[in-house]
Image (cartoon, rainbow, N blue to C red):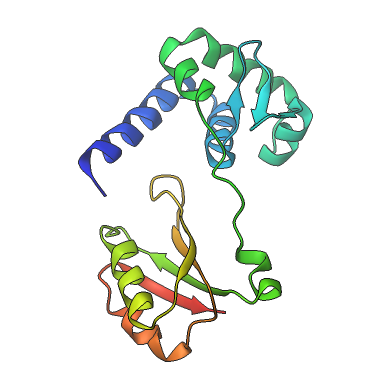
Length: 178
């Protein structure tokens, strides 16, 4: 992971923790918004792309009262840096993992430890040596997830025989192929 990315994520989490340190429910709301790619519009409404998300829906997903959503939004909007961050979040898009089998695609799911630098490149190299194209790669943020994973969707299923090759990559803790 590059130093600039680490620094940016540390800044975001420090800022969120500083603003909400006495309110763990508000921290969960901010984390869920980042995890799902939810942004704030100028009028304080929550969106996933151009789809408006109700306070009640976010409250249910986060396990908080919807008044916590309103107060979290008010605090975010009052802080210029946080408002800028949450106004510019965009969702990552559709992950093909759950429908890959229906489409005749393959899935390689790799759990990573704290050492995650170079895993995507090494994984792509192993897959390309098999003559298989990659359709999609999705890497969970190591700062947001307790057990982050890298999901690779391939043009066709990958042979289980190369699991040991993936396990040799520094930082890889578990591999699933389906």
